[in-house]
Structure formats: C-alpha cells, structure tokens
Image 1 (cartoon, one colour):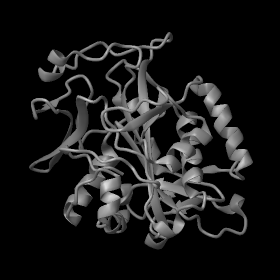
Image 2 (cartoon, one colour; image 1 turned 120 degrees about the vertical axis):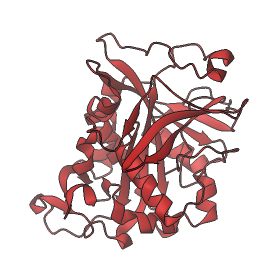
Image 3 (cartoon, helix red, strand yellow; image 1 turned 90 degrees about the horizontal axis):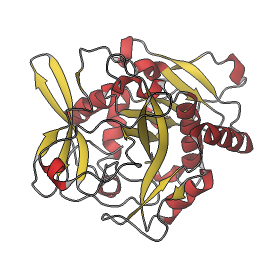
Length: 333
C-alpha cells in the first residue's frame, strides 16, 4: 500500500500494482500522524503543490486512536476463497511488509517513502484505524480438506509470513464527480467546506479508489491479482454502507456510491485487469497530469455487485466465505 506521506513527485505503477490515491491534480490527500503523550492523532491533510503547504481538511475527519470508530467491524473479518485469503493488516504482518518495501522498485511503483521498522509499525496502526482506508493483506490460503469445517482464520498461523503475497486497499473520498473542480482560491486557502454530495435517499456519497499489489514476484502472473481484486470488491459491495460508516458525523449516513482506479498509461497489464472486471476509462486516450488513466465503474454499484458475483462463480470463487479473524490478543496486539 502507498505510505501516507506527501511527495514531491509520484511515480506511475508498474505491472503489479495500481496507483496511489489522490483527489485531483492540484490537491493530494494524506494522513498526518502525531503523538501527544499516549495519544496517537491522525488528521486528514492535503498538500497544495502550488504553495507547498499542508493544510487540514476540516470537513473530512479527524480522530485519535483512543476513539471508538464505527467502521472497525472489518478488523475481525477474514475472507476465504479457494484461490486467495484476505486478512486485516495486523502488527505481525509488519516485518514482512517492511521487507517488501526495502525493494526500491516496489517503493517507486507504489509511490512510497522508505520507512524504518518503527515507522512502519506506526503507519500500520494508522492504516488500521484510519476511517478513510480499508486494507487487507493477500495470503495464500491454507490447505483445508473441507472448507465448510473451517470456522475461523487463526492470526499468525493461517496468515504466516511465508503465505503473505501482497495487499489490496480502498481509499475513500467525497464523491464530487458531478461537481465543478474546486477553485484555486479555495484550495490555496485550505477551504474544503463545500457541502457533501448526497444521493436521493439522503446518504452522503463516498467514492472509493482501489489499489492492489502483488509484492512477491514469484506469485505474479498467476491470476492472484484478479482473485484478490474480485474477492475484495465482492466484500466491499456487500457492505457499501458499513465500510464508510466511520466517515459519518452524528446523525449522518453515507454510502459507497462509485468505484474508481488511477493507473499509469504504460501499465497495460493492470489496465487490462481492471477492464476485465468491469472498469472503464473515463476519458479514453486522455491521461491526467501524472500520466494516469482514471477508470471507473459506469454501472450502478448494485448491478456491479451482481456482475462481480458472476465473475467469482466463473473464476471458481463463488463459494467464498467471511470468517472470524481470531487473534490471541485483542486487535492483534
């Protein structure tokens, strides 16, 4: 997953991961981490590339680790299929993930900074608690004689380091596709106070941007990226309101209204993967400032859910199950 750090430049993805999430050419979002005594505080920020200033986004969210987040239900969910297992990103995954990210090519591909192991642990905690991100680690599933007999996934055993192969993420942001681009003055002043877009039922509309990575080279080209993406999308589409609940203020409801991905124009393999599952280029032949195509799901998401379920059946994964992720200690600590 891309680390949430502002960068002077962002590179394109290669053929085993899609790009870092960003809101627009002039406005990049990231999470600022600070520690105040025993409190670990995370604030959504945006980096303005004209001024170089990082400003808090007042209307998105701010939280600390001591708060109880409403969308933490997925932290105990493991998704099991015959081809891939998805588990929450826990502390015992960090050493392996850190080892992956020592690879400069992988860091460039995911627009990531090199971090110390201690920084990696801090980042993992932020990613686990940050309500505008949903993250799973991709794992080779354990050998099971009868999958129906498997009642839970055991952390540290079923997802041991040798079974980890990558990750998949969803970045949440306001669904502003129907709105005009924010004015330069508003961006420079840090004014992000425009009213959120609402659906006909009164739910706040949230867009989700997908990123998928197969970190281990020996597992690329074996269909596991597609398996990871299909399983992840099926889970997200089944829980469209729950996955964004942590972004809601008191009395507010929200729903995932659209899905999209940004992919470097030279990443033909990743473009093909997302086209294969139903994403389409918003403006064929035209890339953004970073040389990326933005692709999106054009059909209503309820219809897209039926489409993804059909692809899972065709891919031999229609019998996937959501299981309890069993940790020896609460929250993997």
